[in-house]
Image 1 (cartoon, rainbow, N blue to C red):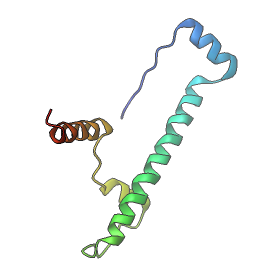
Image 2 (spheres, rainbow, N blue to C red; image 1 turned 90 degrees about the horizontal axis):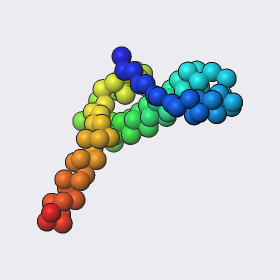
Image 3 (spheres, helix red, strand yellow; image 1 turned 180 degrees about the vertical axis):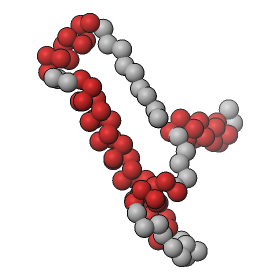
Image 4 (cartoon, rainbow, N blue to C red; image 1 turned 120 degrees about the vertical axis):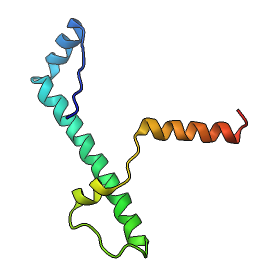
Length: 92
């Protein structure tokens, strides 16, 4: 499980609840929709990679199996790898 907590000031909460009836539900919907978009992106990339690789003779039967088997690197780690490469290229 992964849990995220957000702390709002009293004023932020008051203003937000002027527009949003259920903050928890709204937040969960936003996060789950973004996760769905990320899953779709990983699936599209991984399925394309598998289809283009002649050594791949079988693909998992479901989208979630394909996503689960993908080599996923966190955005933070990818950013760090990119920064390291750029520093090497520029002699920093």
